[in-house]
Figure (spheres, rainbow, N blue to C red):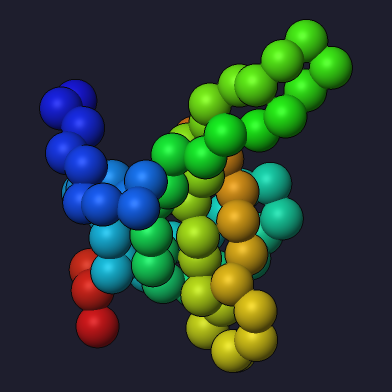
Length: 76
């Protein structure tokens, strides 16, 4: 998969705007962003890809690993 940078660490993703589920928490919502983020660890910095999901019921966006998202339906 080719990764396209959109600025500010944001990346293009085929499910942006789609209804998705975070398999780790069971939260369902719309995929709002995929971001390449630096995480500080004891062994030094590490880069991770995080997905941001806006819950259907509202509230704060949830972040999870990109590998934890599964598509539920096309964009609204």
